Image (cartoon, rainbow over all chains, first blue to last red):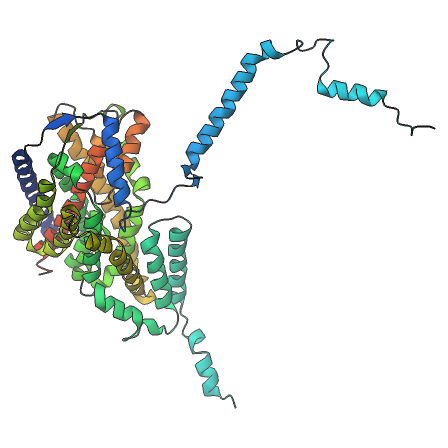
Length: 134
Length: 375
């Protein structure tokens, strides 16, 4: 029980001290920034994120800050390559579907058009299986 | 002739195998697996695994009184030099710009240290001594060098499990943090967009920052001077721009060499007879809890800030008030973008994350000061 009381005391004192110290640091930093008189300008979130990414990339080299390396394909992130592949494939399929009415020579089921399957079958039927000259 | 004595000598190694050493060799394999196959902090977990394996081989001369691993331990872990040298490298690689742009976020870093003290209480409830409880609590700083430094002073016999826990949980930030954030925030809160205003931080301010932090923290919490002093020395070298070679050396060559030595020395403390105790399991569980509590306290504090500012602070960034820089900030950004793909929080989260780095060192110093150790 004595230990718990000591622990509670540690918690209150410890957190109080940490907060007090960092609040003091906040005040000092605000003061320094006021003296610095650098103007504050609005920036877009994307710009700020790019800058943050640059800072994070440097810190990634620190021990204990490592993130597992993501797989790449010719220097590009593998998931991005996969996404591009899926998108182009889908685009190609869509284009084919949209272009079909214009480029097909005969409507599906038409008697004047024979599919490759049908054409091959007809060709096989016309071929004599017996050796020539006999 | 081969006599009984020669055969005895030949079989000395095999006879020296114990079940504890076999289990520890198994644990070293797990560490190798995590480092090599899973990419979890490989720079540290691989040398730690190697140290653990080498120390647990039967009759290992490496952990004898003049063995290499023992010498490495005495050279840099016993006297706390290695974690401090690593801190110079970390300081040289850290840009505190995001924190300087938003100094109020320093309070989020303070809130992110709550887990240290709550875990200390839980450890006391489980019957650990005051020194041991404080060492376990410091895992909540989510800062490897700070954990090693503080536990090396307060409870050197628990250094192995504490270091493994600290570094393992650091690499598990993307797994541990999101459930805590989702549990404590609503969809609307996670979708809050925070405005950006950029302030050019002059070179003078960037140079003044480490000096102010050293002077302030060193004066008010002298026990934190070694930690904060080395972290800020690295940052001062970087920001001054006049000692490029020293900056590069401390963040590359020195940090790499020290990391190898530190990992081997820590691994060598993981000897079966000392490591395989129920207390090790408690340390691992309490460390995990400390991490969760840190994130929770940060998020709750950010919610208070959000309420005070009238809905201008996204509570997610509170979870970044820990020391795992910049991984914690990146995880916050990912969580925010899962709700709203066009929500960019990274810079704000980096500010809280940089604050967490300073705050964890301050918290380590405060713990040492309250324990009356480390001077």
